[in-house]
Each structure stands twice: as C-alpha cells, then as structure tokens.
Length: 322
Image (cartoon, rainbow, N blue to C red; front, side, top):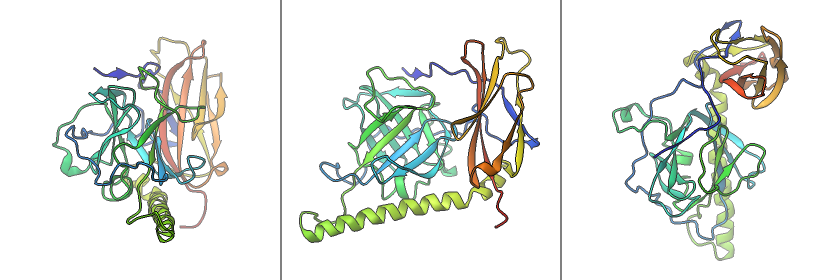
C-alpha cells in the first residue's frame, strides 16, 4: 500500500507568460520512471561504522528540487543537479531499520523512512533502461549521472543514516507513520572510509586527502552542471531570459474556488503577492545571479489554502560574457 500526498492539488493552472511561451515544466509533466531493483544490490563499500562523515547528500522531493552536497555537516550545500520527477508515495517493504539506506547501487538508492516504508532515489534514466520494469510515483528521479559521484564511487554505503528535512525545521528522524508532503527533503549522511588504515599518523593524513578528493569530485560535478545551464535550457526548449520579465498566471475559468491572491516565489523565497486580477508581476532578473532559477506560482483561496501551484525552471543570463 502506498501513502500519498495529503496537502496538494495539482491542476492544469497557473501557467506563466514571460513575453514568450514558457517551455516544459509544470508539476504535472513527469519523466518516465524505472524502479530500483528490489533484489539487494549493495554498495561494495562496507557499513560506515565509526568512520567520520564524508559528505551529506540532500534531495528535495519536488519538481526541480535541489540535489546537493554538503561538506560541513549541512551548514552549506553546493548544487549538483535537480529532481526531474518527484515521488508521490512510499512503497511498503519488510525493512526493520527506519531512517537508513537499505540498498544502493548505480541503479539507485532505496532508503527507509519509517518502519516498513521505503523511498527510492534514482539517477537520470538511461535510454537503455526504458524497457525495464517500472512502478509509478514511488521514486525520486534526479538529473545526476549513474557513472560518477553519488551513484558511482561516492555511493552511500548500506546502513547510512537518512534524515527527514522539512521546511523551517532541522533534519531529524522520520516520525512514525510518515507520509510524503510537498517540499520534504531526504538527507543522507554518507561516511566512506578512505583506502587503507587510518589508525596511525599516515592513515590520518590519508583520510584528509580522501576528504579533499571527495570534495573535488563533487565540486567538479556541481561546476559542470552550472556551466551547462544554457545548453540544457536550449535543448529542453526552456527560456533563457534577461532584464525584466512580466509574469502572469493563466488561471482556469472553471476553477470552483475563488482566487483571493496570487503569490510568486523565486528559488523558494516569496517575492510578490497580488490580490487584483490579472495578478501581474514584473520580475527584475538582475536581482539574481546568472544561471538556473525556479519560479513558483501559487493561487490562494480566501482561507489561505493553495488552490493551484506550479513550478518552472528558467535560466537567467544578464552578463555580456559567453
């Protein structure tokens, strides 16, 4: 049995007008999925035991949510990629250890939430895997490659701690009977021992070198992702924009609930609220850095509940350099 979202109503609504037609990106647009195999396919790295934390992997279960890594215990993160398809359910499993990595391979990571439930995190789908068995809506699909980094040499070992990070809360254990909510993030605490012993002075130096190596690998992935933003946007027919954009929600005329206000968020930060139709907002893109940004539009009812909610990924390029 699956648990489903409880506080979300996705509808065909709130499309943005950015002067040109905005490309693909509504919450209802999903990529094909493939299930992480249920047969154990564990990482070749042993259980982390008492090894020091190597890095943290944080995955926002949200369309265009951030997939990021931290080297300072979660105080700061670097962006490795995005979520291309969020999970809307957990899957039942006979697992007895809540909040840990149950299985891990280049095919994906299966993590337990509360006892008896797992959620799966996958790398980008390869064309060769399209014919494999699929199970709808129980996986978080990311843009990350299966050949390097998180799903390769830096794969979280089986048994790694998995925490729940909800908006405006610090990461912590999954509550009993946990069900998915919009904006929830999974935080995997990854401890991978360096090659060779670390019990002596030479070993301690080896561990420091290993930590630097891990950081360099993940920073390289982050830089590659950032530098290819324009190429990705053009290939996916998304808008590359600059200057001031006029944002306009396209609300459904047969919406049963009365719209009291429309709010705009840029990278999860509220920037504008409009209470008068047509709810226009002129967004000055020079106030943000060049690169990817997520626009979210919410239509609110008189009670303050969300009637519709849509997210879009765009690329800003205001600098004159290449």
